[in-house]
Amino acid sequence: MTSPTTTLERDARQINAHDGEVRPGEIAVGVVIGRASEFFDFFVYAIASVVVFPKLVFPFVDPLTGTIYSFAIFALAFIARPIGTTLFMAIDRHHGRGAKLAAALFLLGTSTVLIAFLPAYDTIGVAAIWLLAGLRIGQGLAWGGTWDGLAPLLAMRAPESRRGWYAMLPQLGAPIGLIIASALFAFFLGNLSAADFFEWGWRYPFFVAFAINVVAMFARLRMAVTPEYVKLFESGDLEPQKISETLRVEGKGILVGAFAPLATFALFHMVTVFPLSWVFLFTAERPTRFLLIEAVAAFFGLAAVFVSGMLADKVGRRTLLGGSAVAIAAFSGFAPQLLAGGVVGESIYMVLSFVLLGLSFGQSSGVVASTFSRKYRYTASALTNDLAWLFGAGFAPLAALLLSSHFGLIASGGYLLSGAVCTLLALRFNRRLEMATGG
Image (cartoon, rainbow, N blue to C red):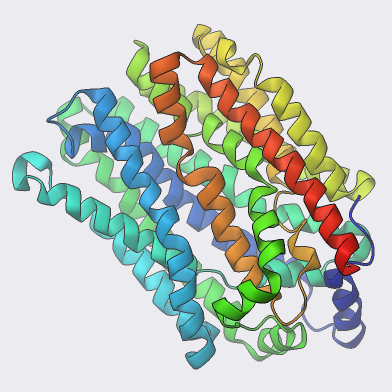
Protein backbone atom coordinates (compact mmCIF):
# COMPACT_ATOMS: atom_id res chain seq x y z
CA MET A 1 0.00 0.00 0.00
CA THR A 2 1.23 3.47 -0.86
CA SER A 3 2.70 5.24 2.14
CA PRO A 4 0.47 8.00 3.56
CA THR A 5 3.54 10.20 3.92
CA THR A 6 4.69 10.51 0.29
CA THR A 7 5.92 13.94 -0.69
CA LEU A 8 2.92 14.50 -2.95
CA GLU A 9 0.46 13.83 -0.13
CA ARG A 10 2.29 16.08 2.31
CA ASP A 11 2.30 18.88 -0.27
CA ALA A 12 -1.35 18.23 -1.08
CA ARG A 13 -2.40 18.79 2.53
CA GLN A 14 -0.53 22.07 2.59
CA ILE A 15 -2.05 23.37 -0.64
CA ASN A 16 -5.60 22.29 0.20
CA ALA A 17 -5.34 23.93 3.61
CA HIS A 18 -4.65 27.33 2.04
CA ASP A 19 -6.61 27.31 -1.18
CA GLY A 20 -10.07 26.02 -2.10
CA GLU A 21 -10.97 28.04 -5.18
CA VAL A 22 -10.61 25.25 -7.75
CA ARG A 23 -12.45 21.99 -7.15
CA PRO A 24 -10.89 18.66 -8.18
CA GLY A 25 -13.97 17.83 -10.27
CA GLU A 26 -13.30 20.82 -12.51
CA ILE A 27 -9.68 19.74 -12.99
CA ALA A 28 -10.85 16.19 -13.74
CA VAL A 29 -13.05 17.40 -16.60
CA GLY A 30 -10.10 19.13 -18.24
CA VAL A 31 -7.86 16.11 -17.76
CA VAL A 32 -10.39 13.68 -19.25
CA ILE A 33 -11.00 15.94 -22.27
CA GLY A 34 -7.28 16.27 -22.91
CA ARG A 35 -6.52 12.57 -22.50
CA ALA A 36 -9.49 11.46 -24.62
CA SER A 37 -8.39 13.69 -27.50
CA GLU A 38 -4.81 12.42 -27.29
CA PHE A 39 -5.87 8.78 -27.18
CA PHE A 40 -8.31 9.25 -30.04
CA ASP A 41 -5.38 10.57 -32.11
CA PHE A 42 -3.33 7.62 -30.93
CA PHE A 43 -5.88 4.96 -31.89
CA VAL A 44 -6.80 6.53 -35.24
CA TYR A 45 -3.15 6.27 -36.25
CA ALA A 46 -2.76 2.80 -34.68
CA ILE A 47 -5.72 1.35 -36.58
CA ALA A 48 -4.53 2.96 -39.81
CA SER A 49 -1.12 1.35 -39.21
CA VAL A 50 -2.81 -2.03 -39.62
CA VAL A 51 -5.56 -1.55 -42.20
CA VAL A 52 -4.30 1.39 -44.31
CA PHE A 53 -0.57 2.16 -44.35
CA PRO A 54 0.75 -1.30 -45.29
CA LYS A 55 -1.27 -1.14 -48.52
CA LEU A 56 -1.07 2.62 -49.12
CA VAL A 57 2.59 3.26 -48.26
CA PHE A 58 4.22 -0.19 -48.57
CA PRO A 59 2.48 -1.88 -51.53
CA PHE A 60 5.81 -3.19 -52.85
CA VAL A 61 6.11 -5.84 -50.10
CA ASP A 62 3.85 -8.59 -48.76
CA PRO A 63 1.18 -7.61 -46.17
CA LEU A 64 3.14 -8.96 -43.17
CA THR A 65 6.31 -7.10 -44.09
CA GLY A 66 4.29 -3.98 -44.85
CA THR A 67 2.68 -4.12 -41.40
CA ILE A 68 6.08 -4.59 -39.76
CA TYR A 69 7.37 -1.51 -41.61
CA SER A 70 4.23 0.36 -40.58
CA PHE A 71 4.75 -0.57 -36.92
CA ALA A 72 8.36 0.62 -37.14
CA ILE A 73 7.09 4.08 -38.19
CA PHE A 74 4.44 3.84 -35.45
CA ALA A 75 7.28 3.60 -32.89
CA LEU A 76 8.92 6.84 -34.08
CA ALA A 77 6.43 8.95 -32.12
CA PHE A 78 7.46 7.31 -28.85
CA ILE A 79 11.14 7.90 -29.59
CA ALA A 80 10.41 11.55 -30.38
CA ARG A 81 8.23 12.11 -27.33
CA PRO A 82 11.02 12.67 -24.73
CA ILE A 83 12.73 14.98 -27.23
CA GLY A 84 9.50 16.94 -27.51
CA THR A 85 9.30 17.20 -23.75
CA THR A 86 12.81 18.65 -23.67
CA LEU A 87 12.03 21.21 -26.39
CA PHE A 88 8.66 22.29 -25.04
CA MET A 89 9.84 22.47 -21.43
CA ALA A 90 12.28 25.13 -22.62
CA ILE A 91 9.34 27.05 -24.16
CA ASP A 92 7.47 26.59 -20.88
CA ARG A 93 10.34 28.02 -18.84
CA HIS A 94 10.84 31.06 -21.08
CA HIS A 95 7.34 31.83 -22.37
CA GLY A 96 4.89 30.11 -20.05
CA ARG A 97 2.63 27.05 -20.01
CA GLY A 98 0.05 28.66 -22.28
CA ALA A 99 2.57 29.26 -25.07
CA LYS A 100 3.91 25.74 -24.71
CA LEU A 101 0.48 24.12 -24.91
CA ALA A 102 -0.64 26.27 -27.84
CA ALA A 103 2.50 25.41 -29.83
CA ALA A 104 2.33 21.70 -28.98
CA LEU A 105 -1.37 21.33 -29.77
CA PHE A 106 -0.93 23.28 -33.01
CA LEU A 107 1.88 20.90 -34.03
CA LEU A 108 -0.21 17.87 -33.06
CA GLY A 109 -3.25 19.06 -34.99
CA THR A 110 -1.20 19.99 -38.04
CA SER A 111 0.67 16.67 -38.11
CA THR A 112 -2.58 14.73 -37.71
CA VAL A 113 -4.54 16.54 -40.40
CA LEU A 114 -1.65 16.38 -42.87
CA ILE A 115 -1.63 12.60 -42.54
CA ALA A 116 -5.18 12.74 -43.90
CA PHE A 117 -3.79 14.26 -47.11
CA LEU A 118 -0.94 11.73 -47.46
CA PRO A 119 -0.53 10.61 -51.10
CA ALA A 120 -0.07 6.92 -51.83
CA TYR A 121 3.25 5.29 -52.69
CA ASP A 122 1.91 4.65 -56.18
CA THR A 123 1.56 8.43 -56.62
CA ILE A 124 4.79 9.88 -55.22
CA GLY A 125 6.96 6.83 -54.57
CA VAL A 126 9.32 6.62 -51.62
CA ALA A 127 8.48 10.21 -50.63
CA ALA A 128 5.23 8.83 -49.14
CA ILE A 129 7.26 6.82 -46.62
CA TRP A 130 9.37 9.82 -45.64
CA LEU A 131 6.31 12.04 -45.33
CA LEU A 132 4.54 9.54 -43.08
CA ALA A 133 7.65 9.14 -40.92
CA GLY A 134 8.09 12.91 -40.63
CA LEU A 135 4.46 13.49 -39.65
CA ARG A 136 4.61 10.66 -37.12
CA ILE A 137 7.69 12.25 -35.55
CA GLY A 138 5.76 15.54 -35.48
CA GLN A 139 2.98 13.83 -33.53
CA GLY A 140 5.51 12.44 -31.06
CA LEU A 141 7.22 15.78 -30.51
CA ALA A 142 3.81 17.39 -29.95
CA TRP A 143 2.72 14.74 -27.42
CA GLY A 144 5.85 15.58 -25.44
CA GLY A 145 4.65 19.17 -25.27
CA THR A 146 1.03 18.48 -24.35
CA TRP A 147 1.94 17.66 -20.74
CA ASP A 148 -0.09 20.33 -18.95
CA GLY A 149 0.48 19.41 -15.29
CA LEU A 150 -3.23 18.88 -14.69
CA ALA A 151 -2.80 15.20 -13.75
CA PRO A 152 -0.37 15.82 -10.84
CA LEU A 153 -2.44 18.89 -9.88
CA LEU A 154 -5.54 16.68 -9.74
CA ALA A 155 -3.67 14.21 -7.51
CA MET A 156 -2.75 17.05 -5.15
CA ARG A 157 -6.27 18.50 -5.04
CA ALA A 158 -8.05 15.16 -4.58
CA PRO A 159 -9.54 14.33 -1.17
CA GLU A 160 -7.10 12.19 0.77
CA SER A 161 -9.52 9.28 1.12
CA ARG A 162 -10.33 9.24 -2.62
CA ARG A 163 -6.92 9.54 -4.24
CA GLY A 164 -7.34 6.26 -6.13
CA TRP A 165 -10.68 7.42 -7.52
CA TYR A 166 -9.27 10.69 -8.83
CA ALA A 167 -6.11 8.97 -10.10
CA MET A 168 -8.18 6.82 -12.44
CA LEU A 169 -10.09 9.72 -14.02
CA PRO A 170 -7.33 10.72 -16.50
CA GLN A 171 -7.11 7.08 -17.62
CA LEU A 172 -10.72 7.12 -18.85
CA GLY A 173 -9.44 8.85 -21.97
CA ALA A 174 -7.95 5.62 -23.35
CA PRO A 175 -11.10 3.46 -23.63
CA ILE A 176 -13.16 6.49 -24.70
CA GLY A 177 -10.69 7.28 -27.48
CA LEU A 178 -10.54 3.64 -28.59
CA ILE A 179 -14.33 3.22 -28.69
CA ILE A 180 -14.76 6.27 -30.94
CA ALA A 181 -11.81 5.42 -33.21
CA SER A 182 -12.83 1.75 -33.62
CA ALA A 183 -16.45 2.67 -34.33
CA LEU A 184 -15.43 5.24 -36.95
CA PHE A 185 -13.15 2.86 -38.82
CA ALA A 186 -15.70 0.05 -38.57
CA PHE A 187 -18.34 2.33 -40.09
CA PHE A 188 -16.20 3.30 -43.10
CA LEU A 189 -14.83 -0.22 -43.62
CA GLY A 190 -18.32 -1.69 -43.45
CA ASN A 191 -20.08 0.82 -45.70
CA LEU A 192 -17.53 1.63 -48.40
CA SER A 193 -16.03 -0.43 -51.16
CA ALA A 194 -12.35 -1.27 -50.77
CA ALA A 195 -11.48 1.20 -53.54
CA ASP A 196 -13.39 4.05 -51.90
CA PHE A 197 -12.06 3.29 -48.45
CA PHE A 198 -8.43 3.38 -49.57
CA GLU A 199 -9.04 6.39 -51.79
CA TRP A 200 -10.77 8.67 -49.28
CA GLY A 201 -12.69 6.86 -46.53
CA TRP A 202 -9.73 6.23 -44.22
CA ARG A 203 -8.91 9.94 -44.19
CA TYR A 204 -12.08 11.04 -42.38
CA PRO A 205 -11.08 9.77 -38.89
CA PHE A 206 -7.97 11.97 -39.13
CA PHE A 207 -10.15 15.00 -39.92
CA VAL A 208 -12.30 14.15 -36.88
CA ALA A 209 -9.14 13.87 -34.77
CA PHE A 210 -8.11 17.35 -35.90
CA ALA A 211 -11.53 18.80 -34.96
CA ILE A 212 -11.40 17.16 -31.51
CA ASN A 213 -7.91 18.54 -30.99
CA VAL A 214 -9.16 22.08 -31.65
CA VAL A 215 -11.92 21.72 -29.03
CA ALA A 216 -9.50 20.15 -26.53
CA MET A 217 -6.95 22.89 -27.15
CA PHE A 218 -9.28 25.67 -26.01
CA ALA A 219 -10.49 23.66 -23.01
CA ARG A 220 -6.96 22.94 -21.83
CA LEU A 221 -5.62 26.42 -22.52
CA ARG A 222 -8.41 27.90 -20.46
CA MET A 223 -7.39 25.75 -17.50
CA ALA A 224 -3.67 26.34 -17.91
CA VAL A 225 -3.60 30.14 -18.01
CA THR A 226 -6.43 31.38 -15.80
CA PRO A 227 -5.20 33.07 -12.59
CA GLU A 228 -6.71 30.43 -10.28
CA TYR A 229 -4.82 27.64 -12.01
CA VAL A 230 -1.60 29.60 -12.33
CA LYS A 231 -1.74 30.19 -8.56
CA LEU A 232 -2.25 26.47 -7.93
CA PHE A 233 0.56 25.43 -10.25
CA GLU A 234 2.92 27.83 -8.51
CA SER A 235 1.85 26.87 -4.98
CA GLY A 236 2.43 23.20 -5.82
CA ASP A 237 5.77 23.94 -7.47
CA LEU A 238 4.36 22.43 -10.68
CA GLU A 239 6.76 24.53 -12.69
CA PRO A 240 9.20 23.40 -15.41
CA GLN A 241 12.81 22.68 -14.54
CA LYS A 242 15.81 21.91 -16.72
CA ILE A 243 15.80 18.34 -17.97
CA SER A 244 19.45 17.72 -17.07
CA GLU A 245 18.94 18.94 -13.51
CA THR A 246 15.74 16.92 -13.11
CA LEU A 247 17.45 13.74 -14.28
CA ARG A 248 20.34 14.35 -11.90
CA VAL A 249 18.07 14.76 -8.87
CA GLU A 250 15.18 12.42 -9.70
CA GLY A 251 16.82 10.04 -12.18
CA LYS A 252 16.35 6.87 -10.11
CA GLY A 253 12.68 7.57 -9.48
CA ILE A 254 12.09 8.40 -13.15
CA LEU A 255 13.71 5.16 -14.29
CA VAL A 256 11.77 3.03 -11.82
CA GLY A 257 8.58 4.88 -12.72
CA ALA A 258 9.13 4.16 -16.41
CA PHE A 259 9.22 0.41 -15.75
CA ALA A 260 6.53 0.19 -13.05
CA PRO A 261 3.59 0.18 -15.53
CA LEU A 262 5.31 -2.12 -18.06
CA ALA A 263 2.78 -4.93 -17.56
CA THR A 264 -0.02 -2.45 -18.19
CA PHE A 265 1.50 -1.06 -21.36
CA ALA A 266 2.43 -4.51 -22.68
CA LEU A 267 -1.20 -5.57 -22.24
CA PHE A 268 -2.34 -2.22 -23.66
CA HIS A 269 -1.01 -3.09 -27.10
CA MET A 270 -1.76 -6.79 -26.77
CA VAL A 271 -5.43 -5.86 -26.57
CA THR A 272 -5.60 -2.87 -28.94
CA VAL A 273 -3.12 -2.82 -31.83
CA PHE A 274 -1.54 -6.28 -32.02
CA PRO A 275 -4.70 -8.47 -32.10
CA LEU A 276 -6.12 -6.37 -34.93
CA SER A 277 -2.94 -6.97 -36.94
CA TRP A 278 -3.01 -10.70 -36.19
CA VAL A 279 -6.67 -11.11 -37.20
CA PHE A 280 -6.17 -8.95 -40.29
CA LEU A 281 -3.07 -10.84 -41.47
CA PHE A 282 -3.60 -14.44 -40.38
CA THR A 283 -7.35 -15.07 -40.43
CA ALA A 284 -10.12 -14.74 -42.99
CA GLU A 285 -12.11 -12.49 -40.66
CA ARG A 286 -12.88 -8.97 -41.87
CA PRO A 287 -11.41 -6.18 -39.71
CA THR A 288 -14.85 -4.59 -39.42
CA ARG A 289 -16.18 -7.28 -37.10
CA PHE A 290 -13.06 -7.32 -34.96
CA LEU A 291 -13.14 -3.52 -34.60
CA LEU A 292 -16.71 -3.81 -33.33
CA ILE A 293 -15.65 -6.55 -30.88
CA GLU A 294 -12.85 -4.24 -29.75
CA ALA A 295 -15.23 -1.31 -29.26
CA VAL A 296 -17.70 -3.38 -27.21
CA ALA A 297 -14.90 -4.90 -25.11
CA ALA A 298 -13.54 -1.39 -24.46
CA PHE A 299 -16.76 -0.62 -22.57
CA PHE A 300 -15.80 -3.39 -20.13
CA GLY A 301 -12.40 -1.72 -19.86
CA LEU A 302 -14.07 1.61 -19.16
CA ALA A 303 -16.07 0.04 -16.31
CA ALA A 304 -12.92 -1.64 -14.96
CA VAL A 305 -11.12 1.72 -14.83
CA PHE A 306 -13.92 3.02 -12.58
CA VAL A 307 -13.64 -0.09 -10.41
CA SER A 308 -9.87 0.43 -10.11
CA GLY A 309 -10.50 3.77 -8.44
CA MET A 310 -12.71 2.21 -5.77
CA LEU A 311 -10.36 -0.72 -5.19
CA ALA A 312 -7.29 1.50 -4.95
CA ASP A 313 -8.89 3.52 -2.17
CA LYS A 314 -9.54 0.32 -0.24
CA VAL A 315 -6.34 -1.69 -0.78
CA GLY A 316 -3.85 0.93 -1.99
CA ARG A 317 -2.66 1.84 -5.46
CA ARG A 318 0.61 -0.05 -5.24
CA THR A 319 -1.14 -3.21 -4.06
CA LEU A 320 -3.65 -3.00 -6.90
CA LEU A 321 -0.94 -2.42 -9.50
CA GLY A 322 1.11 -5.34 -8.17
CA GLY A 323 -1.93 -7.60 -8.00
CA SER A 324 -2.87 -6.66 -11.55
CA ALA A 325 0.64 -7.55 -12.73
CA VAL A 326 0.28 -11.01 -11.15
CA ALA A 327 -3.11 -11.44 -12.86
CA ILE A 328 -1.62 -10.35 -16.20
CA ALA A 329 1.20 -12.88 -15.74
CA ALA A 330 -1.38 -15.64 -15.17
CA PHE A 331 -3.45 -14.45 -18.14
CA SER A 332 -0.39 -14.63 -20.43
CA GLY A 333 -0.46 -18.42 -20.06
CA PHE A 334 -3.75 -18.88 -21.93
CA ALA A 335 -4.24 -15.57 -23.78
CA PRO A 336 -2.70 -16.88 -27.05
CA GLN A 337 -5.06 -19.86 -27.12
CA LEU A 338 -8.06 -17.58 -26.72
CA LEU A 339 -6.94 -15.22 -29.49
CA ALA A 340 -6.56 -18.22 -31.80
CA GLY A 341 -10.00 -19.57 -30.87
CA GLY A 342 -12.12 -17.93 -33.56
CA VAL A 343 -14.78 -15.30 -32.96
CA VAL A 344 -15.83 -16.72 -29.57
CA GLY A 345 -12.24 -17.02 -28.37
CA GLU A 346 -11.40 -13.55 -29.66
CA SER A 347 -14.40 -12.07 -27.85
CA ILE A 348 -13.49 -13.74 -24.54
CA TYR A 349 -9.86 -12.69 -25.02
CA MET A 350 -10.83 -9.07 -25.65
CA VAL A 351 -13.25 -8.80 -22.71
CA LEU A 352 -10.85 -10.43 -20.21
CA SER A 353 -7.95 -8.36 -21.52
CA PHE A 354 -9.86 -5.11 -21.22
CA VAL A 355 -11.00 -5.91 -17.69
CA LEU A 356 -7.40 -6.58 -16.63
CA LEU A 357 -6.22 -3.54 -18.56
CA GLY A 358 -8.80 -1.30 -16.92
CA LEU A 359 -7.85 -2.44 -13.42
CA SER A 360 -4.12 -1.94 -14.00
CA PHE A 361 -4.21 1.06 -16.34
CA GLY A 362 -6.55 2.91 -14.00
CA GLN A 363 -3.76 3.17 -11.42
CA SER A 364 -0.66 2.88 -13.62
CA SER A 365 0.35 6.52 -13.27
CA GLY A 366 1.47 8.26 -10.14
CA VAL A 367 2.53 5.39 -7.88
CA VAL A 368 6.16 6.42 -8.30
CA ALA A 369 5.55 10.07 -9.22
CA SER A 370 4.02 10.65 -5.80
CA THR A 371 7.51 10.49 -4.29
CA PHE A 372 9.03 13.22 -6.48
CA SER A 373 10.06 16.39 -4.67
CA ARG A 374 7.99 19.54 -5.13
CA LYS A 375 10.50 21.39 -7.27
CA TYR A 376 10.93 18.63 -9.85
CA ARG A 377 7.49 16.96 -9.77
CA TYR A 378 6.14 18.62 -12.93
CA THR A 379 9.13 17.85 -15.15
CA ALA A 380 9.92 14.46 -13.59
CA SER A 381 6.32 13.30 -14.02
CA ALA A 382 6.40 14.30 -17.70
CA LEU A 383 9.65 12.40 -18.30
CA THR A 384 8.39 9.34 -16.44
CA ASN A 385 5.26 9.34 -18.59
CA ASP A 386 7.30 9.64 -21.80
CA LEU A 387 9.73 6.86 -20.91
CA ALA A 388 6.97 4.55 -19.71
CA TRP A 389 5.27 4.83 -23.10
CA LEU A 390 8.59 4.41 -24.90
CA PHE A 391 9.71 1.30 -23.01
CA GLY A 392 6.30 -0.25 -22.55
CA ALA A 393 4.33 0.69 -25.65
CA GLY A 394 6.48 2.12 -28.42
CA PHE A 395 7.77 -1.17 -29.78
CA ALA A 396 5.10 -3.48 -28.37
CA PRO A 397 3.08 -4.04 -31.59
CA LEU A 398 6.27 -4.51 -33.61
CA ALA A 399 7.82 -6.92 -31.09
CA ALA A 400 4.62 -8.94 -30.61
CA LEU A 401 4.03 -9.27 -34.36
CA LEU A 402 7.64 -10.23 -35.09
CA LEU A 403 7.67 -12.83 -32.32
CA SER A 404 4.26 -14.28 -33.18
CA SER A 405 4.90 -14.44 -36.92
CA HIS A 406 8.12 -16.41 -36.33
CA PHE A 407 7.28 -18.52 -33.27
CA GLY A 408 3.49 -18.55 -33.12
CA LEU A 409 1.01 -16.79 -30.86
CA ILE A 410 2.51 -18.45 -27.79
CA ALA A 411 5.43 -16.02 -28.11
CA SER A 412 3.06 -13.09 -27.53
CA GLY A 413 2.18 -14.66 -24.18
CA GLY A 414 5.86 -14.71 -23.29
CA TYR A 415 6.13 -11.05 -24.20
CA LEU A 416 3.20 -10.23 -21.92
CA LEU A 417 4.74 -12.25 -19.09
CA SER A 418 8.01 -10.32 -19.37
CA GLY A 419 6.12 -7.04 -18.88
CA ALA A 420 4.45 -8.36 -15.72
CA VAL A 421 7.81 -9.45 -14.28
CA CYS A 422 9.31 -6.00 -14.97
CA THR A 423 6.41 -4.29 -13.19
CA LEU A 424 6.80 -6.43 -10.07
CA LEU A 425 10.55 -5.81 -9.97
CA ALA A 426 10.08 -2.04 -10.48
CA LEU A 427 7.53 -1.84 -7.65
CA ARG A 428 9.94 -3.64 -5.36
CA PHE A 429 12.79 -1.29 -6.26
CA ASN A 430 10.50 1.69 -5.76
CA ARG A 431 9.67 0.53 -2.23
CA ARG A 432 13.41 0.36 -1.47
CA LEU A 433 13.89 3.82 -3.02
CA GLU A 434 11.13 5.27 -0.80
CA MET A 435 12.71 3.73 2.29
CA ALA A 436 16.12 5.08 1.32
CA THR A 437 14.83 8.62 0.76
CA GLY A 438 12.34 8.66 3.61
CA GLY A 439 9.38 9.08 1.23
